[in-house]
Length: 572
Image 1 (cartoon, one colour):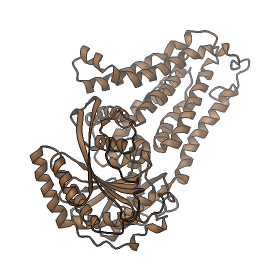
Image 2 (cartoon, one colour):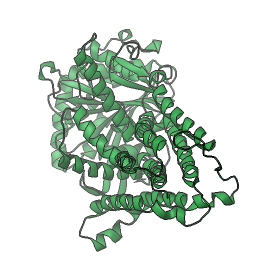
Image 3 (cartoon, one colour):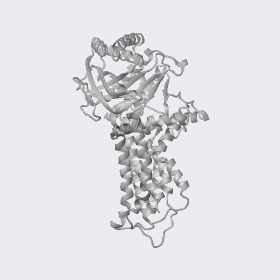
Image 4 (cartoon, one colour):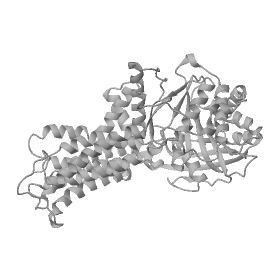
């Protein structure tokens, strides 16, 4: 990216310079031995060896606790082949010898199926053993091993903060540490790690403080680790075509990931509790950069030592940013004007509509917008029908799955997705004649309805600009042009095609295609359609499991706005 638009990253917190601590651990051999022992007990138990983990953590000198949990999914999760989820989380607390347990740092490792992440568990236990022998800790250290990936993490976080946000049934935590200041989630899916890929996208587009990411990047450079973002190597420095192309690809992947609203890893669930967190994934993609667990252990040790020195929460750096690479960032002041320009277009169209001008800006003599409540009655049917269609799209797919499975030979998960698509398509046919239910609209009726649609769309995009910029920007790019141009009469085919191509459902399908292109793994239409159906199901699951906002925002916000524009186009 151009340097003025994407300056180099830097540490804003003076106490977090990576050269101010010396890492003295060599955890590689110990971590591998513990990983092999953990893998053996895991195969013997047929799952996470809870009892062995408790005994091992206790022998290391930690205060050990377990937390059973259970969660019945709203419909079967075909991606992970599960419906009723039962598991147990195990965590150990290393009490700080120099404080009163008011603050804590956390290292999380999910227990995956098979041999995946065994080395991460071994490194967690080895790091806990090393930290137990140090006396400089001013914050408690929590070492957490979760079962069933994000479901276990969600159960532990809700129990730790004594809340129930997603109807997970779990046992209370018999022991707690201090308020968690920062957390790291570690995933090592391969025995040979060549680079560490960092994930920052959190639930509903939240991002961690940029200082935490910069700290990890600086320690990777210090310890000789190759650090990647979105699975891609750092772009070459200096002005060059390939460098700009790679930066734009990385930036586009981050925008799509943030707009999706799902957590990019276990860290994404911590951000909703105001806990700065990252997910670190060890990958095997660039064999020439192979390194051992010792270097990764020193990186984790150094990060915890630096975070241990903080006297307050991370707050001095950016919380709203985009990353073309790990060494450069785009601040909100650089990219927010893009969405502001789209909102300006809506504001101008709203102003023209209020002044009684048609789509070309020419006033119509003898016509004026109705000013009395009775004059607006003809707007009630299309507005109510559009809102009802959005409500049905949000409520019926999950609640009506039992009826669908009784009448059609499909599974519950397929029934939910197919019901979602059926209601979506059926809703497009409902509003065409609703304006005829009441008379009194006159020739300017469609302008009143368009004014309502523009106001609703402007309100939606303004709220999204504050909550999830990437989602608001993508919806703005797709919905604002047809919203500004739509009008009845004349040749409706070009506008109808434009509206169909910019409907939220089609936009999601195009996003799937674009994501595969940015990952340099293009998908055919068949594969893209299967990924699209999977994305629909996962979007509904994330809304019920974690409280993701994408599904309700599209169903209750973007879809009704689009239906109002669709009704304007076919107004007679």
